[in-house]
Length: 278
Image (cartoon, rainbow, N blue to C red; front, top):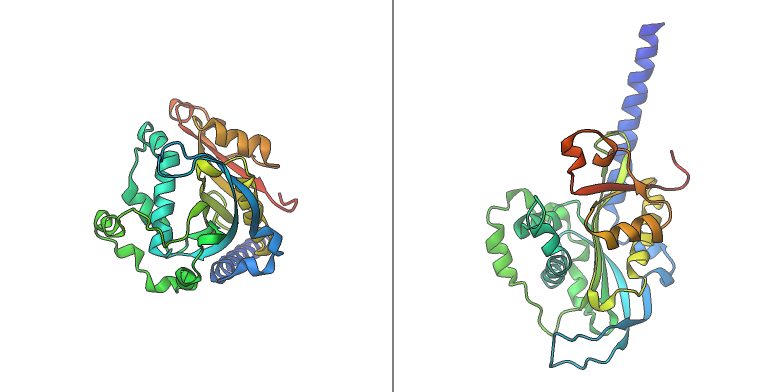
């Protein structure tokens, strides 16, 4: 009986691994998952752009703009990649510099260029150039990210500048569909970045991106979202734990364990279970 039970457990484990592989393959294969959502999810009407007091050449009056949310698979078009890197550095650079991790833009470029990286990008509709979106469904196999030998040179080539002909990135989310490290048969959506330009905050854009990520996850039969937040990032902690529904400190977060290393951890791991899953 014990031997038979072990066989059943082995068979069940194999089945779960196969199911996990199929779920992740299906999620990662999608080139335009937003097409299944109503247009209300991907169009952002009449959002407020705040005064840009740092640029004397611009009109500092608050203006209303319309934007669209677009889905991208890695590799991002260079003009979009440039702005996402800059936005990350603007929003998070100081926190990373003051942390034990440090700020490493080479590593961030590698993250953004990973084969499995997926993005929701908010672009100002008035400046969106459809031609710049042609690489949206580029086959990730053509992007050999494991052989990146000189990321600093790549960043220099990108130049980290934006010309007037490229779409204006208002915000973005970087996420991946992958297996849970603590439960290897569980598919999860891991949120790597959620960044909104300081000129466009308080428009509900972060909430909108998270809603779309949750809907896509459910559509792909992925029922858990995980993310990491610096403890010192009180605005982000409040956003996830208070403004959004269902997010909580994950059971694997350092604060749930004893020991000096865990007590001194600079981050919390947050998560949300979707669709009533357990």
